[in-house]
Image (cartoon, rainbow, N blue to C red; front, side, top):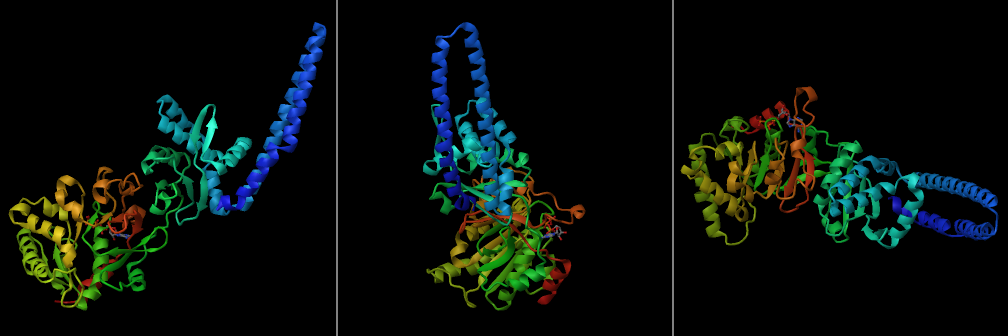
Length: 497
Ligand SMILES: Nc1ncnc2c1ncn2[C@@H]1O[C@H](COP(=O)(O)OP(=O)(O)OP(=O)(O)O)[C@@H](O)[C@H]1O
């Protein structure tokens, strides 16, 4: 944290500057000026000219020396700042030196007479100024002032400036915690982050307000400088993180270096072709398999394209895997009549997991293709699926569905029931909020910007996803482990039918 270690030093330098030598110099200059004016009033013209030239020379000398003095002070501050900062903080100091981008922002603000943009630009400029040696004097004054208040006066206007409260490390790069402009949301900084991203040559800038920050009026700006999401191998990951309950499945790594566990609820996985949906389904099955063998989970599969679940026909991991829409419709209807309804009649209480009352999970690959089938509504599938989605949760009947698209037109009202939403690479920005929920794009979810994974880049970006759950609305960027063909074969052959 920079401020904690260097803040008091800034204050004491500020005091030095505002008192002592500085003030004495200026009061000396003032007295000299008055005396000079008095002499000039009673002198002949030639002497007045000589005196005026001499005064000009003295004033220039003073200006030059005070400029040198400010540069010297700037250097000292810079050195002190750098001494007290760790390497991550130094990065941010460098990053904040982006006057080009900030000026551009200011220029736009002026051009469009946009007050909000102007306030934002000032705020950002100040962020940069904080680390700019060449504006040391102003910076010290601002800094000193900011310690008392979050506003500064420029001319006759009061401006709100962000106070950098702390600079923290994160696995992806430095994070600046700063006081937010009153009423600001993550969107307020959209434009600025886009501009800054380019000019600072960082991979990404994320602005986020966590619930704990909101209470303190803080925002955090993360400067993503490296991506820690290297895909772990499936076998290593799942050996190290076996699920200790079927209700919470460790499935992926987070960019903070942790493990992401999916709370089992209705789950929607959306990703364009080749984004890694198959890997996510395999990972889920891997974690659920031991619980299925222990009788705590029953699995049903629907795979209209005969893709990810095809091999499981020959495995007893699933009670049933159906492929054509007619059979899928019958299977889902019987889930409603034989599982959901009886549970609703008998329980009345909330669902408790047991061998008599196992978790029932319907895995659907290619939900979009199912929903677009002309028999989707006619066969009763649409209605029964909606029933499970809207009522199954309290009775332990869940749907985990993968889809290539997340458009409303395709998934219709089904989308709203999914408590967990996972977005792998998608084709369009418009899908982001549709999949992850309102405001996800503004909060920095960029599944549409994940580069296509292919042979040429060794599938470096397959399995990267953003996830959001109703239980924990914080948006996470995660990466699923790599599931090899051998892993899939092992799973397929482990439970022959
Ligand atoms: N987490 C991962 N790490 C590395 N490679 C991965 C990962 N997940 C998937 N891949 C690789 O990316 C490729 C595409 O993955 P996958 O088939 O799961 O995508 P998909 O979204 O299901 O595609 P489609 O919709 O076309 O079936 C595969 O070669 C797979 O091995």
